[in-house]
Structures are given as structure tokens and as C-alpha cells.
Image (cartoon, rainbow, N blue to C red; front, side, top):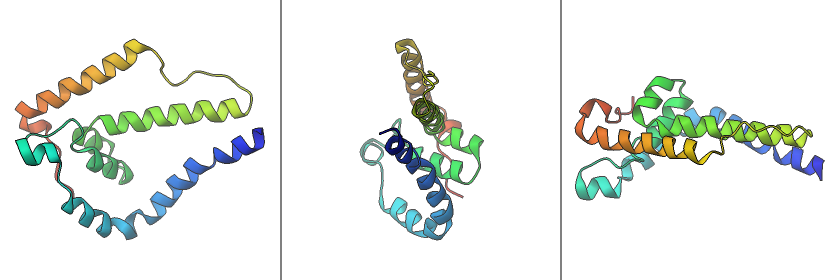
Length: 135
């Protein structure tokens, strides 16, 4: 069973490698799909929702621009960091080491969600916080 679990842990790095390899050739398709999709909240109200900029943020991370990714939507880089921490826990656990790297405190999650909500509201009034256009 442990070997099967270790084999399943290979899936995320292999998927990440595939995304890095095939990102550039598929970029025009992703841009075309992105041009077709508009945020329903933004289409109705004209305001950016808390998730607006998330896709651009992930694309900026893939291009190696972490500061631009944080500017577009800081939730995406934070989620990537948290995913890496959780994945590291699973890898260590598969080798018999129990270690808590992923935050489990209710206070931590309350603060993270609170900061994101304050940022989402602030960018409605401060244009400099709006997502950057894709380059």
C-alpha cells in the first residue's frame, strides 16, 4: 500500500512538468479561451470579484513573475505555497515521518481570508490594485 501511495505522489510533479513543457505551445489557445470568458459579477456590476485576476496570477507565476502574480491576485500565489506545504507533508508521511507544515489553525485561516476580503474591497476603490493586463 505504501508503494502505491508513493506512486500517486508522483502525479503532481509530473503534471507540473507537463504544464511547464506545454504551456508556451498552448498559450494562444488559453488566451483565446480567456478572451471568450468574462466574470459574471463584473459583467453585471462592473466591479471585480475576489477571484478576478486569479488566472492572470497563475500565468504570471508560470512565466516567473511572482510580484506581478501577487499584484493580479495574491490568493493564487498563497494557494500555491499552501499546496506545496501540504504536498510536502504527504511525501514525508509516505516515508514514515509525521510532520505538520500545512497550517491547520482556525485563526490562521480567518486572518488569511480576512486579508483577502479587505484586499478585494480595497481594490474596488484603489485603481492601482486592479489586475494588470496580460502581457
